[in-house]
Image 1 (cartoon, each protein chain N blue to C red):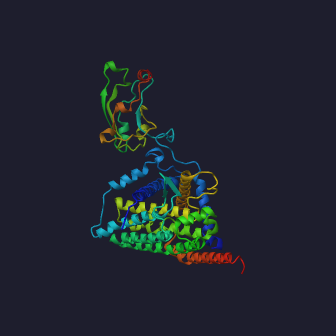
Image 2 (cartoon, helix red, strand yellow):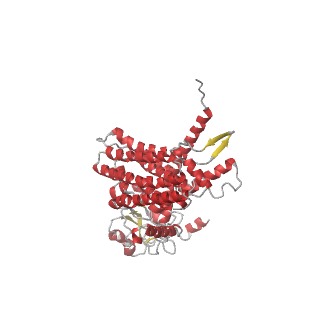
Image 3 (cartoon, chains in turn blue, cyan):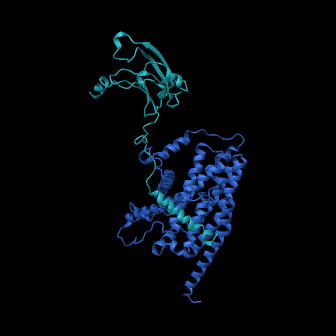
Length: 350
Length: 157
């Protein structure tokens, strides 16, 4: 049987993977800078401005500091699991970026290069799966620390994540009823041809937004790691780069959640009057990429803005919100969307 | 709680508007060391040893400042004025060695109040950082103000 390998395909995919990983890491790194700057500006102060112009080299200094710290592994901790916890968190955080369409297609040297690493037809399901596996990172970290309080905090964190996955999934079901496809590329193309889904599903977007805050352990849902109250929660026993991995994984999760919100509800790389401006081919794709990043940066700013505005939820309030408020709301949203689709198919007759 | 309050979202929205306003307000940070906050004129900073109008040192090594100092930071050794040195010192007794240990000093200003000759004043600067303890023991030369006629002309040239 003849078997030829399309080397160009492999090379372009490898380049794309490195580019996407690199961009995720760089954006996560500069999210830490952005967080400190936004926090400072909201609090009437200036934030880091000494390391490089506008403090832009500050994340490098922070990373360097974390590398230089002493690696402490508690003697009675399970060594393998202790190291695996943050590694899993980082792994699942990076894995979610594989199915996101970063732009249209680029035409390089006569080949159409798609800017999505894997255009699988279960795109969004992949993301929900990987986020579900992210729970392992938290639980393993809490267990392997051999510390009762870390374990309790990890249990809190894990139950928070799985409780908020449910309304997230339910809100997305209503979205799929409208779009008919799970593939992220299809969803973006439908938004490009029609209206953005946020106008068709405002409640769905709201639920998705609130659940994203809970999934990434950001205020107001950051009780599991509440730095001031619980001395770090499941991060407690971690030092140096393992702690760095946990914190970094959180920022990557934040970046991916922002990109997802932009892609699923706000049109992804499409912008109004995209096809009638007169840009062609590669320039249109590049404009789309820039637009996607602007939307993503706005959502990252939103994450930070909310963090420095509202106090955090107490744990029972948090669970009550997830189970008793968001799930019924998501079900109601599904009901209304389903009813509307049915009426539309029947020509709006009863 | 009313229904509107239970929704949380209107209250969150109002809160976020307030933080947004703060984002654009003037910042309260002082860009030290490019800008400094001004001290008051009676600020008790580093000590200086004064001279009179003719450029002679006022300090007569009487020891009242050393006695008044609650932290025992001041030490001095007196010496007698020799016949050729009338332009240097006011009275017959002067301080050959006058040291203040800035690490002991609590900047209370008692030495300034105790001095009968108005020789010790506290200026508006504070002690700069140093790597070694002995760098903090300030001698007479470190604290004496420049000679009004001779050194100021030198500095201006």
